[in-house]
Amino acid sequence: MRVAAKADAQTRQYAKANPQAVAQAATVCGAGYELSMAKPLPDGTDPRMRFATLFAYTKGGNDNGCAILDNNAGGPRKMNIKVCNGVTGDSSKCDDDPGTFSQYAGPVYTAHPVCAKVTATMADSSGRPWINYSTEYAFLCN
Image (cartoon, rainbow, N blue to C red; front, side):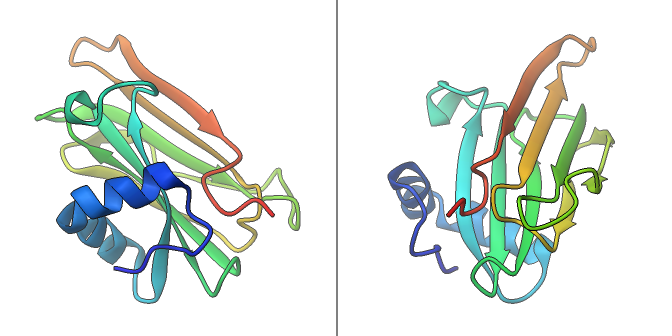
C-alpha cells in the first residue's frame, strides 16, 4: 500500500503500525489508490482505544478521492461517511453511505477531492453519538 507523499506524520505512523488494516481498507476503494489520511476516531483518542478509523485515499495525485469509515467497535453500529466535492467542484454534490455496519461505511467517492469536506459519524449500540467528525483535510488540500 502506497502512502501519499504529502500525507501527514500521523498517517505515516498509523500506516507503518497497521499495514494490514490500511491495505484492506484500500481494496474497498478499488485499484490505484494511495493513502492520504488515516484518522483514529474519536479525535484525540489513543489509536488502540479507537471506535473507528477514517481512511481517505487519492488516485492520480488529487484526481479522485475515496473515503471509508472502518468500524473498530466490535459489533454493528449506526454509521455514516459523507464526502462533498472540494474547491474545484460543486460543493453541494455529495456522496454518503448511511446505515448499520459491522465492518465499514463507504466507500464514498469524489472526483474533486482537493479540500473536499468529509464527515464521519458513529453511534453506540443504544444510538448515542460516539463520533461526529468533520474535516476538509482528509484529502490533500493544496
